[in-house]
Length: 263
Image (cartoon, rainbow, N blue to C red; front, top):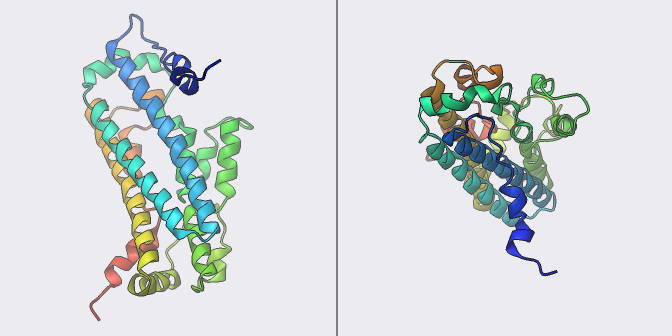
């Protein structure tokens, strides 16, 4: 049987996944569901790209890694723009179906937590929110113990004759990425003498900034929609989201900004 567009993309199955819980059906619940399903698809794609990016760094293929990083950053811009669509829904329109969400909350997005882990934003408490031995918990546990994107980048630098301290290369990957003056000295040298790697560093900074931008827009959208109320499913809402702001993934790339001079 001929492969068609509908069959290849499983359009019938895909467009059958929007099951409204409100009764009678509230018009804006459809938008809410589709936006969040789209987010999850994009999170899946970003994780797919991060995996590819890591492979290219391990293969010492910086140009291919750079192309992949540009794609990730472009997807992040789409995630931010999706908030513009969600903000066309007024607080009253959201409240018309909010109670039907029961305990469901974006706080429970395992893919977003996996992305945070991949970028170095690791918190032990996150694991406890997912059922023991569930596929989501197992993926998160694996990502929690694994090196982050930053660790793979430092390994790339080490393999290209940059002196990264061994204790940093062999650090405990379950811990938060800490700033390092030794790494910062290497980065400053790269910015002065290795423009291709410096360009990759700027793309990593774009990624870090893009994630922080998405967080900020998410906070303001939540405040605009429910104010200081608890989030869906009893999550902390805007108060918790505010605490995640200005928490960089790659602190050394930010720290060196004040170290540059004209000499």
